[in-house]
Amino acid sequence: TDVEVITSRIKKLNIEQQYQKADMNYFIEIRMEVGKEKVNGNVPVELTE
Image 1 (tube, rainbow, N blue to C red):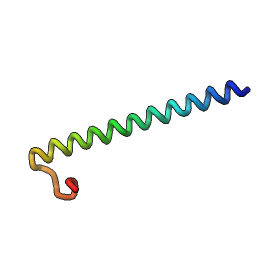
Image 2: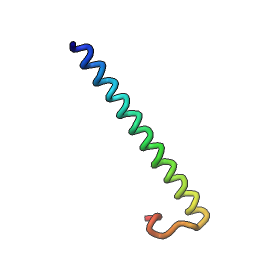
Image 3: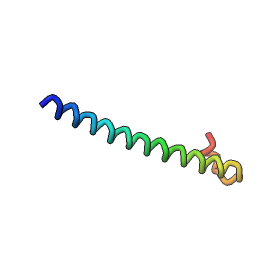
Image 4: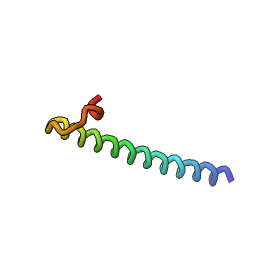
């Protein structure tokens, strides 16, 4: 039925959204780590560009 199709699409979108959030959090954490390293002066030049 139409309702089943719509429901499954919504579920799929919700799952994709959760993955995107996880990716975003991951990149934010990496940036924060690199930021800390920069402050401590431990970052190779390649990472700062």
